[in-house]
Length: 217
Image (cartoon, rainbow, N blue to C red; front, side):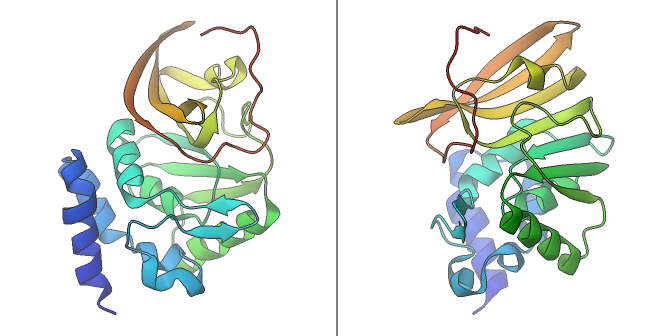
């Protein structure tokens, strides 16, 4: 299989038409080899529009969503990033290509091992992979310039918002089936947040996602 041609097609035919036009983002998607982070049995589908299962309840976001998230969060070289939901390690590798360092946390031990092994084999040195439940926050490394929640949550917990630096951002898919809204929340001043609704989609719910409560944001 010609992966380079397939990667070009992924970027030009799947991702760019969905208004992912940031050249830095497109370059990163071209340079980080997605097929290196896909289970062997699904390698032929690595650059397709298919949702790829990872086992143990995990799956990869489809490429167009990965591209839209990467464009939305606008990673800077000085950013210290928390990713909640390590998956295969691919999105952590995309973030790490642009950030100072990334801490990616997953609740599922098998996915922690998969992400760790994939990132190590690929030679990514600025990602720390840890096991745990980070959906309400992760103290190691906090506060963060950027937090990315890579699955759905009914709402963003206050404890997680408090781990975003002033001037920092948090991305999450907020809501429940049949529709979620991709939100970018910016910590504009101490105790003040600005929320932008970017696009609608449906992604798998985070394990241990907080249940709906009377908390309003």
